[in-house]
Length: 73
Image 1 (cartoon, rainbow, N blue to C red):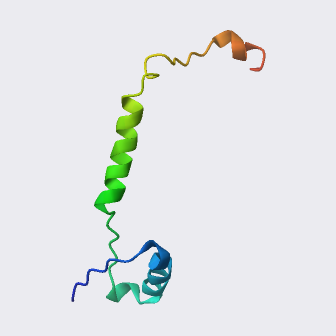
Image 2: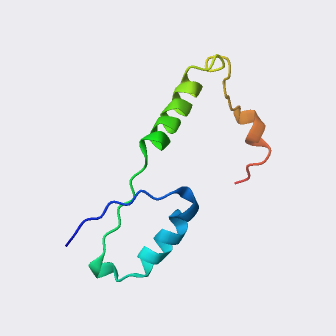
């Protein structure tokens, strides 16, 4: 078995994946790796929300009285 690494642009990624998925599964293994840029974006977004000034300002509370009229046994 041989290994090939392809760097594919977003414009043709779906077409390449369609083609590869048409080949016999017993003869092909597909591993899709996320790019470092995608990983950094996700990490940055998490860090953004964790460091947001609203983290300690928002609280979600649920009161049992709110649902008591809707619940029937």
